[in-house]
Length: 182
Image (cartoon, rainbow, N blue to C red):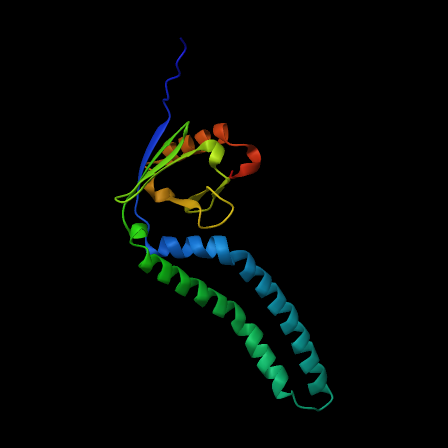
């Protein structure tokens, strides 16, 4: 009888802060919207500025409507950032599980989450995708942002443990499910 010994085990104790959760919400839900809104705002502002310059060259005055449009497009990205921060704070405050210690065991078979009130075991076949950000790994168990484990890199003991984590997910997930930094 041939039995495999699982030698790759990573145990993490994760304490998510409000800052962590804000970055998670912003990175998963608002970053693409914000970048598109900034691009649109810049294009519209450039058009309105060139329109205003042409009016001023002819000796006219800038209509109040143009001024309000410029102001509105300038403030739009700030409103989105403020909304993302408020949403994250409200969700984090309402869900006491987020601020409690989350214990993860990561093996060649999958990832297990233990908290004071819950237990979740996810096999690698059930993982939708894994994304590496500068400070975090996001392990999605569904296509939506709500189905993700947030693993701050500071929770890993050292760089070797991060390397082992990358090795485990690379061996157990299809390449198309991985977005890792080099």
